[in-house]
Length: 115
Length: 114
Image (cartoon, rainbow over all chains, first blue to last red; front, side, top):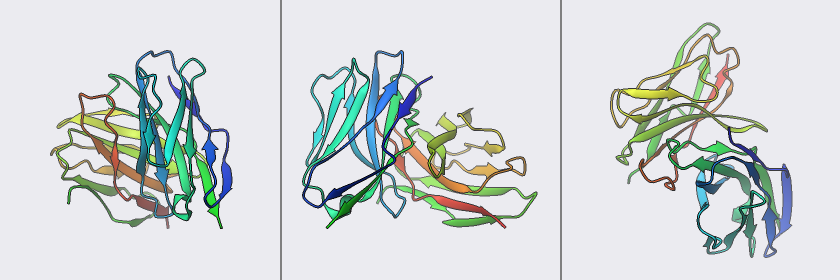
């Protein structure tokens, strides 16, 4: 079974600063996919970024980028130029290739962007 | 616009009562999922279905039942056997066959005990 650990329950950052959210996972699989989802106060789940384990290049989406360390089983999310709208709960999620597209989620990190 | 519709937004259950949460999608996705969200525990998978008339238990299926009679619909019934049903329930769907396809989520249903 896969497990996903987010060790930072809460974080805060000043507007325009950079923040990094941590995620580690445990699996015996070699082929898998990793995701970061954002859940703002509206409770809607929004995909932020995804990474295929077979790709060495770290994924980027505008101000969001990941640091994927496969050997260390680490998948951190970096948010640059933080904005007030980035305030949300962030979930790291794991998907095994060929596993029915099921997601295993971490417990989340509540990020607050402050003026 | 394509998307996932969950209803109702808020639902109250009396002791001993079964309640059904609706989930409809018009994205033409084959797979659909139900998650339960509790504070501090993230999302946990209840049931999932990859094709019509077939579904599998997730990690916390006890006290819940589902059906998948149509591709577009995947209702979740919270039975009286579920002793702690108060939670936020999220439905999701995805394309199958391509492992990196993300799940798309509805806006959720909050279920509370009366």
